[in-house]
Length: 176
Image 1 (cartoon, helix red, strand yellow):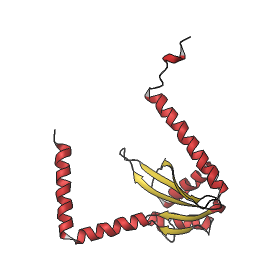
Image 2 (tube, rainbow, N blue to C red):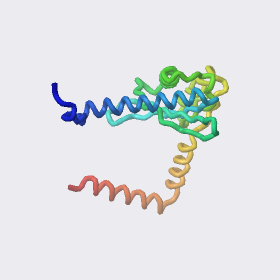
Image 3 (cartoon, one colour):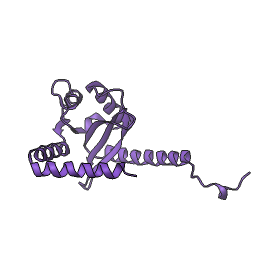
Image 4 (tube, one colour):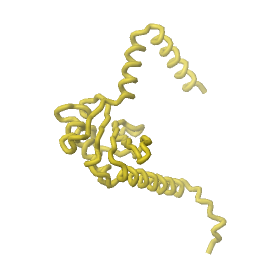
């Protein structure tokens, strides 16, 4: 039998497995804490990764017994499409896996995309049908991004500066 002092545990497979175990432990602790708190809010957004696969980003926001606010990244979940039904099912699946009750759900935050924020059949409406106390709020980060983007487009000097910066960045990245 080989001596354990020769094992280094540095292979990519071992490192990834250790990281996965640590991530599961952290998410388990977060979900335990959320179950102990009275309420939570959920923030989600869909994105496409470099392999051109749709993913759902999920973060939970909650308040502990000392009234400290926590905002925790829970994970990236691969989804088949970005329909409101698929995203709603994925969010509910995440909550079931974390053993977090919809009865504690008080806030939901998404971007302004119709699949997410649509008042008739968007994710926020579907969640609200299940938990009427889960109020929808448009993501302030997205609002800020939109405001900055709109103002930048209307200011010639900013447009010119960003165009120049983009060209310089492109030049540096492409140069040997």
